[in-house]
Image (cartoon, rainbow, N blue to C red; front, side, top):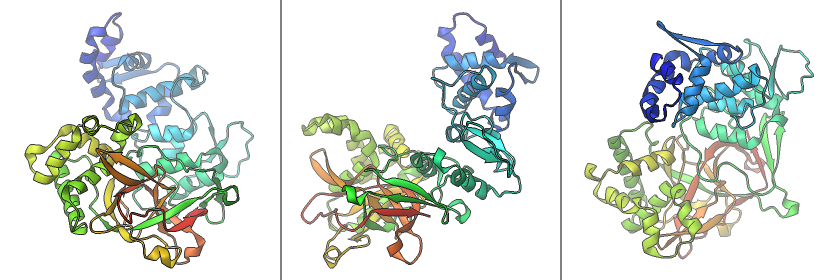
Length: 462
């Protein structure tokens, strides 16, 4: 703290920024900065002094150093958000260019901050958000802010998380709810209450796939209050084709290990590769590696596709990891570990697993659909989805598109693709549990038909 305080008092310290970064990060890693209730202690007081042993420094001087930091991530980003809240509450200035102060954004940005009681994940932040106010159970308020949170420690945490959304449904964007659900869901479905409402007790274990979470078309999204379900309706009369239940999962790999060492990543790659080889018994190995590369590194190839580069050599240049990935798979040796490649793989695969699709369409609509093969031994259909995906889960997508990389074309599901799980025996109801974001592909060729399966114009997420 003394070093950070001294640094804050210097007039010109550009040359020392890299030196102070380590001291700054060490300071905010102290347990006090990881507590959820300290946010209120700081941001609701105009004059705050921090003490650490015999050292002390004003809160504003810490903010000054954080502002000059070259790398504001982790708990430093938490301090930046606290600055925005402090400016809003103590100076009465709207956030403007500062961090968003909506409740759902605070719940996301400050998710690393812990508390003993799971209900305090909401209660400790709700009174600080710009769009939220606290009430007592049964209290009626005309506060212009929209989201109302009734404080009651008699309410179980699961019910609180559910009631927060259902009571204030018009205040939330369904895309935000599903996105934050995607980042942390583990399949527990909020204690059985819901699969589409975020469980704020769970840590973030994955990042969003390319394109973010957004239903294509012009869906009408509403709350079914009786079922506590999210009802998505596509406007069939206006020509909206809705979504297709493309296929179902046949086999799954183990989940990609969290915070994995290079050796653990290599072990997972070998396990996933063996799973694929056992399924695609007549496929060419080099083509399978290419297909795996597309599914793993598609996010990092988007720039390549946007440039529409036709030259094979230039395509290979723009994804430099292809040769290393091929060598890593074929030789499976520690000598071929590539840190940059591992970092890209972790970015996509942490919190996810590889899956292989069933040969037949999901929920075929006719006997003609039954005869079409989605996945074959020489042209397997593969995908990635959340670590709690399981066999029988359905791949739901808007459409498929052709993408060519390094001279080989694949049919790929659209960005807004996700996994669903049947919620009950009556398939005519189109009721599902939401599993999470996904993507799938299959190498193009004869009979590689992907636009088959049951078409949905109504999806009820339970």
